[in-house]
Image (cartoon, rainbow over all chains, first blue to last red; front, side, top):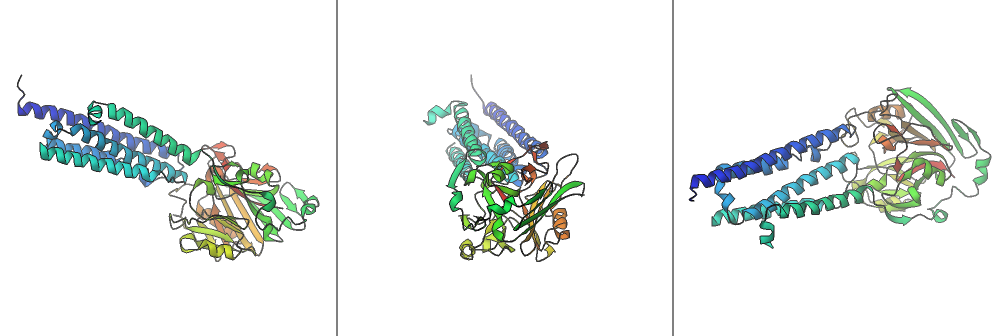
Amino acid sequence: MTLYTSDINKTAARRLNKKIYSYIAFTAFCIVFDRIYALFSHGVSSASMSLMFLYPLIGGVLLFVLIRNLAPHACGAKHYRLFINSYSSGIITLTIAGALAGVFEIAGTSSPYLIYFIICGWAMIILGLFTLAVSLFQF
Amino acid sequence: MIKFFQKPYRWAVIYAIILSLSVTFVLLNTFVIPQAETKIDSSSDSQDSGNNGNSSDQSDATITDNSYKDDNIQITIDTVRGYDTTVYIADIQVSDIKYLKAAFAGSTYGRNIKETTSNIAEDNNAILAINGDYYGFRDYGFVLRNGVLYRETADTTGDEGSEALVIDSDGDFSIVDESQTDVQDLVDQNVWQILSFGPTLINNGGITVTANSEVGKSMNSNPRTAIGQISSLHYVFVVSDGRTSASSGLTLLELAQIMYDKGCTVAYNLDGGGSSTIWFNGEVINKPTTNGDTISERSVSDIVYIGY
């Protein structure tokens, strides 16, 4: 069987759409989580928690929409799986860091360990984007 | 290694486990695991001079349901209604600042070491006690109690959060900005207590909060605890109920207004919400709320109390 370019693009678009829908669902979950938590926080709010949905929205939905529209062939790149693993882990780690920061801010406390989530999150995002860039360059 | 993680979901599963364990550890470390740093030896507690042969004074005390009086300490507690809330106001006159003390849960300085206000009060033979600043919930903010410095990390998290209440060796209250203060200077001045929560409600005889001032970003009425000075060795503890059908709670401005009406020249907000507790002569007299609106005492790190 011969796969034509249009078939490859369709497959890539399907995979990327799946990613986009996953990130939309994750974004919605973050917003709902923040709203539900607000019900039990006696009016105390936290920008870290309220804005944590931006990580999956901008870092997830927006990036994968751009990839789908501008470089769908990235799906077939050699290290695409490494990019997905690293980048997605980074987004999730930063989102969880936002949630934890919100929990701590609302409770009026802090943790010295929160910074490690943020460092790990950004490190994985940078690694993921670097891998993607290298893959696209080699493609 | 990379090949191993190329398989779908392998990385996701492993990373999810690592992340879950990390989050669990951070939450337990922050909220649950006790981290004792200093055990307080009550016999050598600070520069304690208040207990010098005064134990007999307590036995001569005149005690009623809402008052206490002996040679060194006079306390009168009024329960009033205001702002759709029950407010407990303790008017205190002491002969020496050493009778205004602070105590830690379990007589131990550290994080996540907690007891109810009433337990800490009973352990220290308090006459009157309120919850303190819950220092053990944070890693910053000066902690100096009964003349001993326990934490010198300044609170630099916010404008109002940087304000600390200083009670000097003469018993006079003042407000300092922690980020601009060398705590060692305060130690050298033999400061008696430093409480770090805030914000300041009254300073130099004027209300310093507005309708928009709140702890964190809370815009709600809440149970509150505050301490203020009226004149030399004349103080007031105020605790309000809240989060119940009978009492909505106070905003900081309402709390400041109550302190102002009592004649306070300096007043300072302490930890509130579920922590707000006032204990007198063996009884919790307010209705502390825990886990939302359940009436029960929350465990806290520390108390401020009147006693020998």
